[in-house]
Image (cartoon, rainbow, N blue to C red):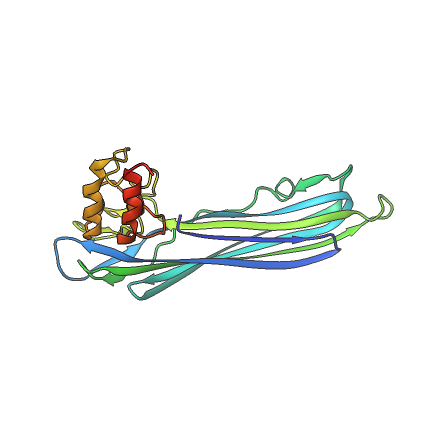
Length: 270
C-alpha cells in the first residue's frame, strides 16, 4: 500500500463537541514504461484501490441524552505524465440517545460501533480518466490521498437519574491507497507496463512478500541473485513475477547503485 492517511481526534468530557481533523499522503514513481507492438502513444486509464474505515468511540459513565454524528470525506488524485485527475468519496453516520442511554460502573467503555452500528468502511476502486501516454519512454505517476473527518456530539445528563454523567468522544480513521487488483493500467491488447519502484510487473502490482536481496525471487539469498541485481542496475526490469522491492537492499524506497553495498552484505550474510 503506497499512501496512508490516518486521522485521530479525542475530546474530554464536555456537553457539546465539535472537532475535525485531516491527514494526507503523496507518493511519486518516475520509472513507469509502457511497451508493446507500436511506437506511438496509447490511450490508457489507471486502476486504484482505496481501503479504510472510520469509527466513533464513546466512553460513558452515567445516563446521557442527545446525539452523536460523524462525517468523513476521502479524496484521491494525482498526476499521470503531467495529466491531473481527482475524485472524492463521502460517508456519514448519526445516532440520537432518546430516551436516555445509561452505562454504570467504573470506567465503562462503549465503542460506538455497538450503538451507531459498524464503523463505515470505504472500498471503492477509483479509475482515472483516459490519458494518452508514451510507449517505450519513462513517465511519472503521482498518487495523492487525503482524509478529512468531523465529529459532533450534543450530550446532556439527567439529574433525576444520576448526577453529572461523564463521557469521552473519540473519532479516528485509517485509509490506504494502492494500485488496483488485476491490471494496474487499462491498456490496448498487446501492451504491458512495468515500474520497478512501484512494484508493477507486467501490468500487475506485486507487493513485496519476500526477503530483501532475493533478486531472482527463488526464496534464497545466494550467488544466483547477482545476475538479476546487475541486470537491474543496467535498467532491466525484475524477473517475471518479481517485485523490485527485493532489489531495494538498503530499503530506501528506490532501486539504485546505492543498494550495492547492502546487497553485497546480504550475500555475505552480514
